[in-house]
Length: 237
Ligand SMILES: [Zn+2]
Image 1 (cartoon, rainbow, N blue to C red):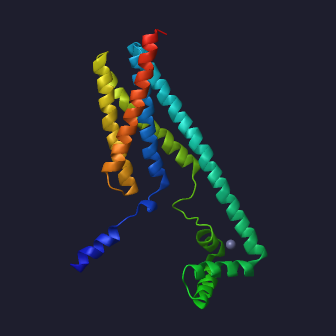
Image 2 (cartoon, rainbow, N blue to C red):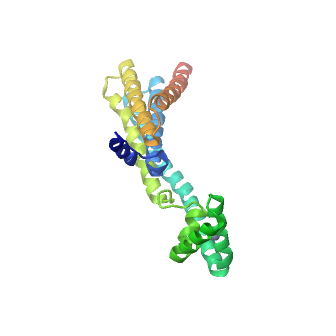
Image 3 (spheres, helix red, strand yellow):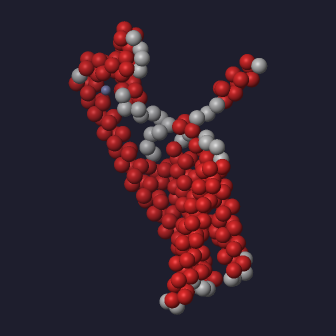
C-alpha cells in the first residue's frame, strides 16, 4: 500500500502555503455579513419602514466595502514599504560588504543545522547564483507567496465584504414585520456557517469549532444591535 500513501503525501497542502488574500477574502465576507445584518436588524427592530431598512442596508454595504478597501490598502502598503526598504538595504550591503554578507549567509545555514564547511559551500553557491534573492529569502523570510500586494488585497477585501453584505438582503424579500426579521436572521446564520466552514477549509483546520465560533459571534452581534434598535423604538426617538 506504499504507492497510494505516497500519492496522498504529494497532494497534501498546508495552510501556510495558501495565499494570504484568500484568507482576507473569507474574513471580509464574514465582516460584511455580520455588520450589514446587524445594521439591518437594528434598524428593523426600531420599527422603521421597509425603505428605511433597505437604505440602511445599502449604505452599510457601500460604506463597509469602501472602508475595507481603504484600510486594507493602507495597511498592506505599509508592509510593502517595509519589504521595499529591506530589499534596498540588502542590496546596498551586498554591494559595500560582500564578504560580511557571505559570512552572514554561512552563519544562517550553520544555525539551520548544516556543518560549517557545507554551510559555506551552500552560501557561496547561492551567492553566485542570486545573492540578493538568497538574503531576502533566508535572512529576511521574504517569498513570492507572502509578498505584500496592496491593490490585490484591497480589491479582495472590498468585494468579499460586498458579497457577504448582500446575503442579509435575501431576507428583505419577505413581507414586513417579524417574518422579515426572522428570514434575515436565518439567511445570515446560513451565510455565517458557510463563511466559517470556508475559513476553516482555507486554513486547513477541522470545520466544527471555527464554524461555531463564527456563527455564535455573528449571532451575538445581531442580538446586541437588535436590542439597541428595540430600545430606540421603546424610547420613541
Ligand atoms: Zn544580508
